[in-house]
Image (tube, rainbow, N blue to C red; front, side, top):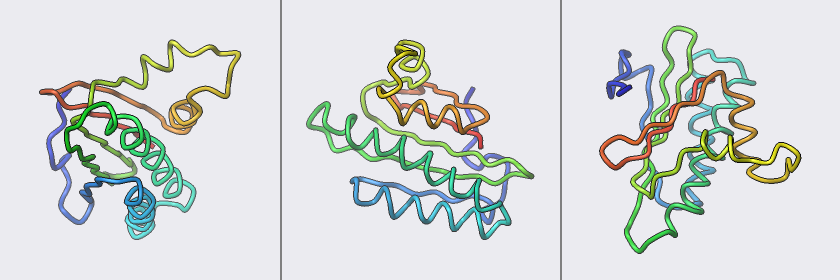
Length: 141
């Protein structure tokens, strides 16, 4: 499933951001929360949106950026459409499907991959695609 860049909404209902370092992750998390609050999304969902992005994009920066010597970036898009909140996290690192990783986790050891567990528990849907060499993670909150 390839999602159009505009997600079927005007510029006022979407925000696009890029990050290249862990320092940017927290700053962008706050921008996402503010974007949500400015559109009337309740504080809890706004916080969850920022937290989900922070966890998943932070994992990309921490793990994906260090897998090779290439310069990488993470492109983030947040869309508010009707009452839906959609986050898309796209990167050019080695393929990594959080859903597959979650299925491989030992359900008895809740200390492993806590970020993936948390995001999948908070989101209504999490979808991963590998499209033209890019990891594309879509999170609905």
